[in-house]
Amino acid sequence: MAKPVIAIVGRPNVGKSTIFNRIVGERISIVEDVAGVTRDRIYSQGEWLGKEFSIIDTGGIDLGDEPFLEQIKQQAEIAMDEADVIIFIASGREGVTSADENVAKILYRTKKPVLLAVNKVDNPEMRSDVFDFYALGLGEPYPISGSHGLGLGDLLDAAIAHFPDETEEEYDDQTIKFSLIGRPNVGKSSLVNAIIGEERVIVSDIAGTTRDAIDTAFEADGQEFVMIDTAGIRKRGKVYESTEKYSVLRAMRAIERSDVVLMVLNAEEGIREQDKKVAGYAHEAGKGIIIVVNKWDAIEKNDKTMKKFEEDIRDNFQYLSYAPIIYVSAKTKQRLHTLPEVIEKVSQSQNLRIQSAVLNDVIMDAVAMNPTPTDKGKRLKIYYATQVAVKPPTFVIFVNEPEMMHFSYQRFLENRIRDAFTFEGTPIRILTRQRK
Image (cartoon, rainbow, N blue to C red):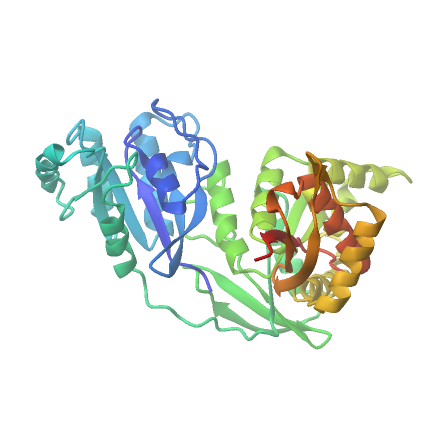
């Protein structure tokens, strides 16, 4: 089920990224006191009073050489397209500006709830200045301080009150949901059409939980699949696909609803920086991942071409060493018939549970092969391990001193677990806890 979406909008340098980081609880946007420096992550997850949501920092959506006011306008329109609730941030230090008025005029058109937050109200004496913001015509302004975290609770209370009613996911647990993600022009839409046209029984086109999305359900070899509409393929009205970060944003909505993600690369163009960014989101989200190299028919090949391409992929996507690679052509239908089988296998890996006794045998054998690290004469002791979750498979290892579990040794244990069990196409997570 797709989570509700909050979008943060406002003119530059009002503290959007600071608020974004406060809400998600991590410092993941680059924050400096200079206009226009947000250039890192624009999409993350948050939670308030048990309600989970996604959050967008529109200031990170780079619109290239667009003029200043046009950029703000387009970012506000993106928020109006994508969000369930919009938080419009102004600055209490500068008061109401003409740029604030311009943003407000754009937001008047939306049918979405808009909450006006006045940032940088760092002390009680400044609260009286907030009343000036009633002039924007967006209702009661919420005084907040991003740098001190003041007032954010009231703002989030109001935001979650506007979330749409929760709807149950319309697919059962046996149905595998997958999506195709990747840069514009890698051939996603051609692959979509080729996959569902591969002599399959198409069950239906279903209105997805994401606005304007159409999910396609079909069956292959007795397994039911749902292809999540990858945002941007059938988007009505304005097209923002040419904006790199916007296409990443649209892909995030599809990733969130999927069990398995097909990361599509263009064989003619090779690997680009944005490919790594989108794949990184899917990896962090714990989704099953398959790397699909499309347009394989369009390049000249010899007996070393496939090996060289695989080496490039493994070098650029080192964190995706577990992901299978398939070389296909939407045009000639080359190897497309293998995709449902591989998707099903990756889904099974995502849901695989290992008995604790068997898991601990593997861990203890690994420790015997490569003893645990020491620090200042003290050795890391591993007492036992257990699996606590699936999608992705997640393991907790109980030890004497969690801080002694070095990243490299944790990676060694992960590799031993992968060697012992079939975890093809899925990340696995290892958490270290102190035994009480």
